Structures are given as structure tokens and as C-alpha cells.
Length: 174
Image (cartoon, rainbow, N blue to C red):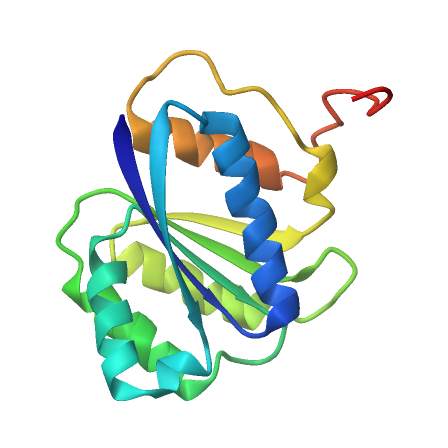
């Protein structure tokens, strides 16, 4: 079974739960095909030097980094510093950075999303910006085609996060 590493950084319980919904959706979609190693890092925990150093090493090697935050002008300075460290240390030639900033009803997510988009460009990562929506209705089957894990997972993640995608079922008797 192929392995796929995910590093998730989140601001609080609410933003942690948003990331958990995404990871649960990926696990459901790729169960039995890909083994996910998910590392969870709260913004608060990233303030501690030893934790931040470990999280930097993991993110520098991860297939997918997810940052989940409330919309504001900028990420906390220590989180930006952490992002810069792992971004500069990346050796992997492919991967993705998913930005779960705000919700479809909140304004102001763009400054953080713009920063993360630039970081993804500099770190040679695909950028997946998404305001959060109710992900429980976006339970789509795995895409046909490529068996390469990063292609399948990136496509699956995009489908899970696309708020324009209609539900794949009515939810009756499931």
C-alpha cells in the first residue's frame, strides 16, 4: 500500500475540525489504496521551538500541507516563520498546500490566502485555496485514471473542497 504524508496546522478547535473533515473524506475515498500519515500541529504548539523544529522537518517532506485558520490580515508571526522554514527546506519536487481559510460566508480570507499562494509558488507546491463549506455532502467516488498517489489525492481533495460540486447522492437510507 502506498503511503501519503499530511501535515495539518490549525488555529483552534473549530479549524482543527475543518481539517479533520477533509482528512476523513480522503480516508473514506482512498481506503485500502493509500495509507495516510497525518501529523497535527496547533498554532499554539508551533510556538515551542522543539515542536516547531519537528513540524518543520515533517512539512518539508510532506506530500500535503494543510493550513486552516480564521480570516484575518495575516497568520501569526510564529506560524509564518514556520511556513518559511519548511518552504525553504523542501526538497520534494511535488506536493500541495491546501489553505482552509474562513468560510464561504466570511470576508477577508484573501490576505492569508495570498501569502500561502506565494509560499506554495516558492516551495514548488500546487496551491489548493478553499473557503470551507459543509464537506459532508461532497462524498464523491475516487477519480478514474492515474494511480500515482499525489495525482489521485490532489484531485480527490479538490473535489472534496469544491463548493460548486453537487452532492453525489440524496443521503436517503445511507
